[in-house]
Length: 411
Ligand code: FAD
Image 1 (cartoon, protein in one colour):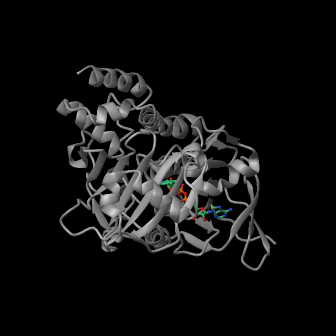
Image 2: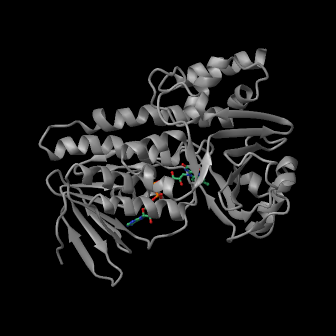
Image 3: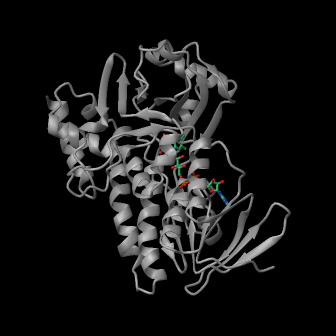
């Protein structure tokens, strides 16, 4: 069966897909989004960065997000034993929004998908992409609807925003192993029971294990008295704890006494989840008739909450190129999309590597912070990783961060 052919077919209605669909619809292109799940549906990835607010605003989707009453977020707190290091996004050096939100993704993603539809995209749920034939003219997409029928589409271009579904990397053999070691996260939503006024709910709390500095926890408060709670560690560390996911999460919280004090009496509001080996990479970000957005391309690590920011940024960059292509201009996907996207992804990669080798912890917990450097680091943590004026962003970020860490250690 052959269905109507849109200009652009977007796989997945998560953050990358919804933002891309809205932006292309606003430019007059006919967009069809095919999403496997019925919304609202749970997703991990609940703490956003200030740059996401900026990108939502540019896409005309911020009002809808503001109206939902999500927990306001203005920065991040890092805690290691008795040491506390705070970053207030308002201190960032890059221009743009300095606040963001902590969101239940079921609600957030649902709002974004509805916004994409409001701007004119057709969003169909419970349709799964099962096949793909690339092609510069019109690629062919096979989709299975709820009834089991396979529908074939021949859009002018396909954006794969299927996240951890990784549809085109799987179908086209583009998957490449990530250079990051395998880590796992245990997580859940809890009624946190934290007494009002005793804790800053406007920041994500990142806690560092007292002994194993590569083991860390997140506490992401929501606006309704619940929080997202999770612990990330290498697989070998997880194996030190036995029992059900809930028992193991409980034990890992107890390993971090300050966290235990904060949420020791918290009770889960949904089953504890576990996700392993989430880091992923691809051999190319684009090909004949397609480009990969967000997690469908690469996922680094959850520690700096960069996932939705990268998803949005990839959607913004791809739609700028695609709009030109659909209008008949000749474009170079690697030069105009891949290279600019990689600039910021490399920044986050530097920060993730430096987190796990401990050098960024030396910077974050340095007692002697130079205010301007603190602001530059804060800018990246706020999501402004594409700011070419920031010496800690882009391809030279690793060398500069190493030098900074050495300086922090020597003072
Ligand atoms: P997704 O959000 O995964 O959306 C993809 C959509 O595609 C889904 O709705 C899916 O149903 C659909 N789909 C999949 N396969 C198909 C198919 N075959 N056909 C049709 N549709 C399909 N990020 C943050 O920004 N902040 C955080 O605090 C954070 N914490 C994290 C913690 C952990 C433990 C992990 C693993 C990740 C975390 N992330 C975080 C990352 C975040 O979850 C992702 O980066 C983000 O959701 C990526 O958005 P996306 O639009 O690319 O994909």
